Image 1 (cartoon, rainbow, N blue to C red):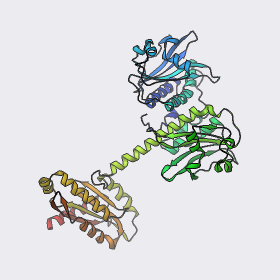
Image 2: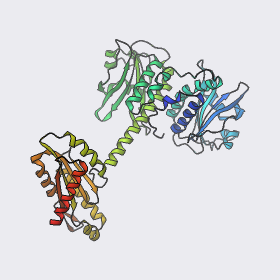
Image 3: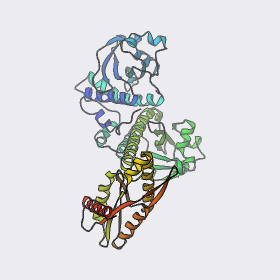
Image 4: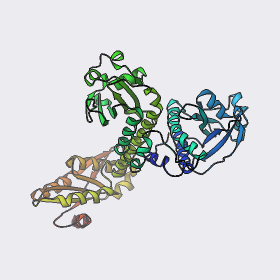
Length: 482
């Protein structure tokens, strides 16, 4: 499943004109299932089904209005069987015999029924692919089932335009809030409120599993009733939690916790009677945490809400993956891959943050270093040897600096070390940089002497660019003298 930007667009899926909202939902289905086309079909009461609306993966409208006998369609299989997941239909003679298989080049397929509140099936939400699908699974079915709960009232609204589309309990209430949900917290909190409304349980909460520490953290919680509370920020040993038991035993819903897990101290102290939990996994399949709801009093029909919970968990997992990808990208952009020093782009923001925060007796000292005769090393021993020199320079400078100092490779053989220090310590830092850049390196039996020209400047009212420029000028003066 491709990562999607927090899916805060869930807010838009239930607002506006039903047809436009439905198109956004179908586009979402294509993205989440990695399919080429998603569509909605409805029964007409005469044994036929009609494609009401379809969307290509790029969001453009697809064909609509096609009417066929339902028994001769893939949708018919969906409605008969309750759902359909097909990775590769090329070897299935029965599916190959259906007219639409060849007409629309269907190779992979996923579909779930659309139902009214009374459970009567009136259509199907489906997606198809023109190539074999590598990984259709139960999580995809759950996601599609959750979307179907939102799609169904929109489809009914298209049959009766004057009536505004209704959304499942909870979704309408969070639509406006989710519009600005650009991180895990702002996405999760409205979803927890919606989950509480949908299930009717007293507490809904999101956990994070820190497997390296064997700890589960209650990251966000929504508690609606006095006397029963899942405390936000609580850390508990992961090995004995209800969430881990639920995962290990594949028991997502438990309506009698005392009889099933009577040995759980936490459940007994909190008085948990009803418990439902689904994993929050990243698109790569790694369990990040759990989405849960619980109560101290008995509740009916809790299991019916699992598809919606799994949809919510999938939305949160996608946002977790997006945030982690952003963090990785920032680290990669901020780090020189060869030397592991900071990249040039870090310099200005670092200085801009440090300079205004200086106390009266502090300065920022910047030491600008340029290796001497580096071109000769590259020309005589090759660029691999030159890279080895740069790596060693980076290691030595990083070892010289404190953890909160800046060590950056500006490009080529130029480096900058900057630190916030007492004024009388500035010269000592520059001396350490000079010492670090005077060494010999053995390269395949050849001794390579490494030296550098170093220039330094202190802030004294300079802004970041001026400070670097002053250190650069001092470095060139040092090179000329040497």
